[in-house]
Amino acid sequence: MTASSDCTKRIYGGFWIRTAAFVIDLIILTAIVLLVGGAIYIIPDLLGIKETGFIQVLLMLWPLILWLVVPWLYCVLWESSKVKATPGKLMFSLIVVNKEGKRLEFWHASGRYWIKAITFMFVHIIYIVVAFTAKKQGVHDLCTNTFVVNKKELQRHQQQLPFPPVASNIMN
Image 1: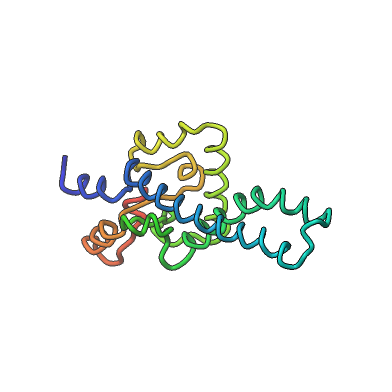
Image 2: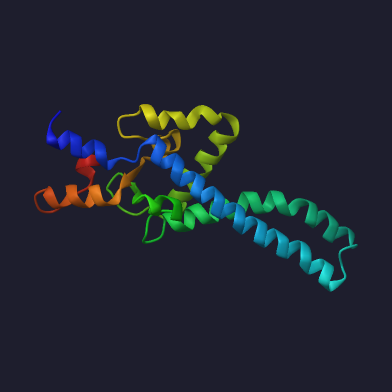
């Protein structure tokens, strides 16, 4: 194994580190959903409109709405931001990038998120793919041509490249 291929292997976020990041994000998301959901259940009671038929139906649907919208916005807004990662990924210096090593656009991150969410709903084992692909990509990464990489290793590798530093050399 050459030094270059060893460096390239360290760039990609592997299965266990991504799983740890996912667990941290899940804890944060659960807290957010519980806080928002709790507030939503308290407001109609405070206003004295909890018995209204529409409000009762809305209160029954809120958990579904919250668990669809909040995780999507959480992941997409963080991953398409300048930090390129959710707080869980940031704790492990991981970022999500496109094939050029650049930040994802909102809709690109949305596509990645929904592919991940849908595949997880139907086949939980699909995440294991990360452990067996050369560039540690899940099905959602393969479909959207994205990579979860170690930010420090990517920066180190880009500094070693001749001018101009292009991340796509690693990503391809």
